[in-house]
Length: 243
Image 1 (cartoon, helix red, strand yellow):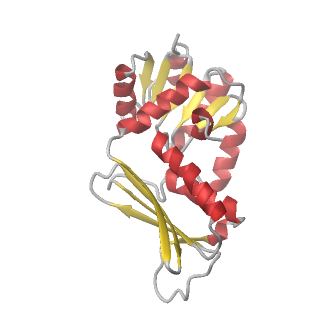
Image 2 (spheres, rainbow, N blue to C red):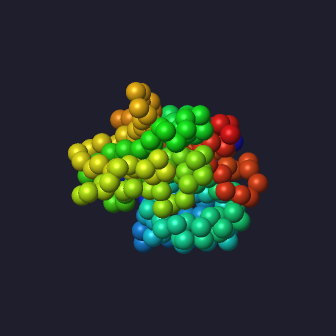
Image 3 (cartoon, rainbow, N blue to C red):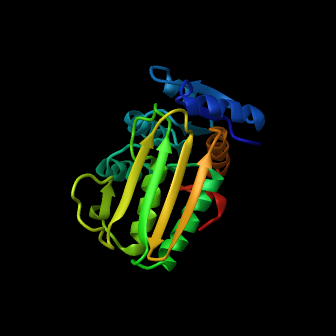
């Protein structure tokens, strides 16, 4: 029997998309809460938490999930690196899927980008460009952050390799830097492009989302999967069997 789901952040865009997708997929939403609501009480009526609220709420939600031994799916982004490390350590005490993007297509983009970064040497300059709607509060997006991590992992580069936009007399591009460019405007749901550019050719891997429902359906797929997993932190690559 599918697990009863708690949606935290129910009044936001993703919260509403999750509710619509759950109805579409005939899944039961046991509770839908937002800031100021009784999260502890809501946990009692659900088997799994899906949280797309705010990075400021992540620790509280995680602590409650661990205390109540409830599997959790986290889609919040915008945490600092030290904060993310602490939260990951906390999340390892419960079955948790944490991803910056729950789209099946985006997760295939992750896998293809890793393969491309492994095959193409440092003579292929790597750049990541992302665009989102004017209301998005953090930059780069969680998806772009993950793409950058993948490239850095394959090329054995540290965080100092990142160039967040360029301005002024920057000098020639070095082979060990990775550019990241965040565009904001209109109602763009989410566009991500990874560019590998060499002398004479260029490879571009692009994913464009036009419906927020793809993220909601992926998150609900993760919620059904994670309830059967032992404690630990997973991502959508695990859910989809791409590893």
